[in-house]
Length: 296
Image 1 (cartoon, helix red, strand yellow):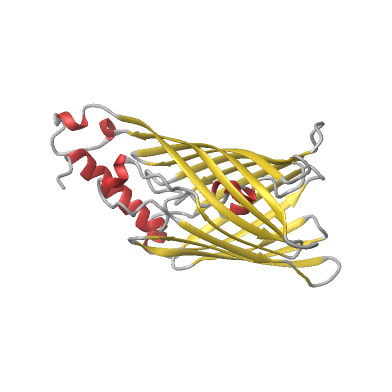
Image 2: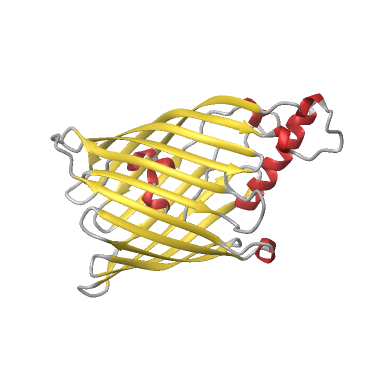
């Protein structure tokens, strides 16, 4: 198949970024604060209306490095048997920018007194933008690079999530529809599969150990695995470390300001060759839990 010069250049950029991140979805250190973007089955599994804001600056000091932003809200509904939510996510890696907007729906089934199974689906679209005119090319008069790309692509995703007070486990495919851009290079490249799991272990009355892991797999790139060791102190302070195998090591600290508001910060240090040309990755989190006036 013959690709245009424009698609070839953008493809090289996209594949380069993909291999560095080993996944297509922007993944946050605080990924469990914006879980419905990865797994729609988590929609509404937490009591009340949850509003989460995440901002991530990756590889600070490296020009054109990824910048990601996520705003999500989800709530249980109809006697807590279903959940509804919405997510807006922006992922910008020069010269390519993607804005994802989606709505999610989940249905929950009680397996026994302790364990619940949730099944979810999401649908939405991606606004894709490529700033071709900002590229420095050998022939600046090349007509292929005289205008910027602007396109809308639809998307659907599915997921399953099992949980209790002590553990959680999930599997999801948040991006099932291929775009024309994807098909120019690899028909299997952009269908990531995610596996997640975690456990809550009471150490004392004041301390809880909360290990968790997230794995992302796609054809054509190495598997990405995030392992997190989190501690909860006095039901208010969260802190710990996480390791993205072969890529980054990080620390985080979160705090509940009150029953409704929580804030957090995470820092990642690159373990690959990029560590020499950047000063790390910074991430901020704000979470608000609202008890709505409507009846669940």
